[in-house]
Length: 212
Image 1 (cartoon, rainbow, N blue to C red):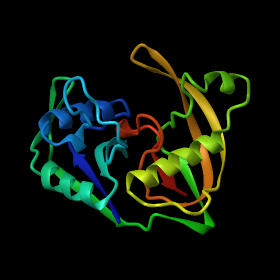
Image 2 (cartoon, rainbow, N blue to C red):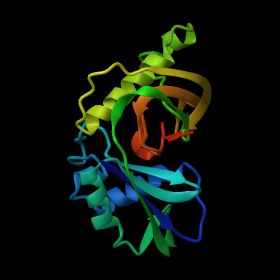
Image 3 (cartoon, rainbow, N blue to C red):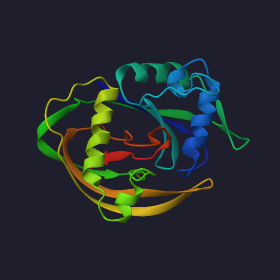
Image 4 (cartoon, one colour):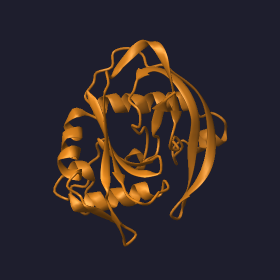
């Protein structure tokens, strides 16, 4: 299986808030292809894990496809773009940087170390009380998110996923909502590709991981 990262090279640098704006623009450009936006209609959402994710990598706009099918769709569509409009400003796309990597999604006998490149959204309304009372298990939550990733690429997991990490929480403001983001590093026996997102809002850069 492979992941594909396409960076849109412009004359500007961008911060993390532009990941969501990038998703909005691309989703409008390719409305007929649900994989780019996960919306069945204006009021209906496709509740499947995002196979195409929007990020800021090295201060550049980037789009990540997490399996073979989504990689081909990404390359067949995005490379035709000449410009992009974000916040009503037009950015000329000078070039594309394409990074393709093969990976073997598996649960192994060795441990790998990863870090969060984008804040991970582990805390929500349902588990907030447990978190405030010190009863929230970050390792268990991350283990479930990793399992969700394997399910999204149709890989059956028959071995136990091990996770052990060091985490730090940070309040972040998203529009009119205060969220709790989590940063840190973790060890797991899951072989995961760089720059995939785990957990909530992974389609707009949250929960992005990279192996150390």
